[in-house]
Amino acid sequence: MGFDGCVILNRIEFLESNEPGIYTVGSGFQFNRLGMQCSNEGFTGLEFAGGIPGTVGGATYMNAGANGQETADVVDRVDIIKNNGRFQTLNRIDLKFGYRSSPFQFMKDLGAIVAVTFRLQPSGSAKRRLQECLERRRVSQPIGERSAGSVFQNPPNLEVAAAELIEKAGLKGFRVGGAMVSNIHANFFINSGGSTSQEMLDLIAIVKEKVDQKFGVQLKEEVLYVHPYCDDLNPNRDK
Ligand SMILES: Cc1cc2nc3c(=O)[nH]c(=O)nc-3n(C[C@H](O)[C@H](O)[C@H](O)COP(=O)(O)OP(=O)(O)OC[C@H]3O[C@@H](n4cnc5c(N)ncnc54)[C@H](O)[C@@H]3O)c2cc1C
Image (tube, rainbow, N blue to C red):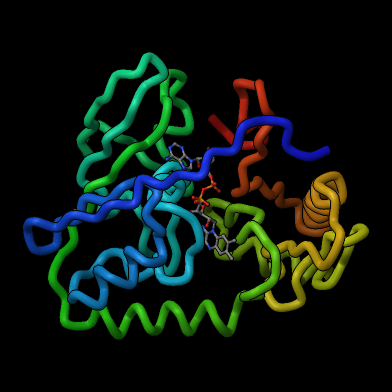
């Protein structure tokens, strides 16, 4: 297993702000950097982005979120390019986001997200909240380890996080080859050295099965599987 396809390094990295609180950002701009910049300039809405790796395009596609905030809350419009090469601007009102879900995941003719405009509100406490988000991440996540972030979505309508279920199933530190459930955050699975993608897939399947057996909860992946040349990139999530 591995990735037999074309990987694109997105270098659309501009940032424009011609009005206070309105940021138009290239989809390759680092989401973490955007969160830091906006918060430090005194605007609220993207404090949670501090410490989230990846790009603005990826965060919008995934509707990334944390600490009660999510990308969709502050998106104003999104510029996309379609498979036929045409550009289109989509306004927030026409975009239906959900928990870690965006309409872009289901657009058959999407080429790529090119740029995103965010509308943020002024706030005297944004800078402090950014620092709190970064600190929370520092103490609760395996920073510096190789992971894809949270593997599973938190189960809907339950007052319990996926990490708690995995931990209570006794799976912290559980491993398949080099793939391992983090000892720091049970919903982060790390490559502790030499893990193959098959080992990571096996670990995910075993954790799912054990949590189901113990608690009767069917965990669903937050991560997306990428199958080259396959239309269905997201087979394990509800459409
Ligand atoms: C340590 C760690 C912590 C994390 N913490 C969080 C968290 O707190 N909250 C959270 O929600 N996520 C979190 N994540 C997950 C991840 O960082 C986000 O989902 C991220 O925003 C994805 O961005 P990316 O650029 O890496 O996208 P990728 O992972 O490369 O891609 C994700 C998907 O988006 C698509 N995509 C990416 N860019 C574009 C584009 N320009 N146009 C169209 N489609 C595109 C890809 O094709 C793919 O399907 C974390 C990950 C790690 C490793």
